[in-house]
Image (cartoon, rainbow, N blue to C red; front, side, top):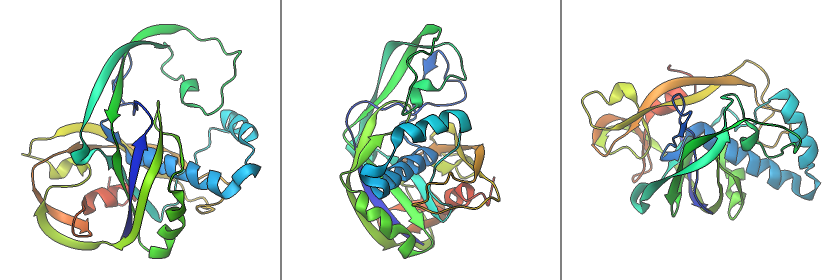
Length: 263
């Protein structure tokens, strides 16, 4: 396994909406979930590949009707981005939001001004941090190399907020070892029994058998939706199998789940 490391720098507060249960209180994860990082990187790659020829208006209008997903190919495995030693805090404030639970206009890149909505008052969480460290794995080194050109590129990240990639390094080889370490990422719930942690429900992509056009393809990804699983963040050393470059420790169980091998 090979991996690249990204230093992601927000331009302000970020919201990564926690579901279920995030209705009147729009709670936020304190990290970038793997599925969110996947969409962020795919958008950056498509923007970089298209350059000035990218017809964003036509692209997003098509998305409003088709609801298609654009994420990284299956041979690339984003495992999220985390604040780590840089620290973070969550700022909660009052904010008007949409009453309809299915509403998603605020998350779109393109909005229609004529849309009428019914508002209500929310408690809204913003993740405040200087930077986050993101990790992306791939079974082949050459699959990761095209993403090294994303340095200093950025776009919308999560439900609210923008960020850019301040630095990106690798690819580096990750060995699979059985050891006891503090995980660098979220950990599947089955490994956390008896250990203190911040637990929550997160998601992986639900892949279909359809063709995957690849990293630079303008075609949507063969994804029908999301599959939930329980995970947590812990500062306690855990004995498990890890993919590691010597300083980063990514649980193999998490990689298996994100690939759809274990539910």
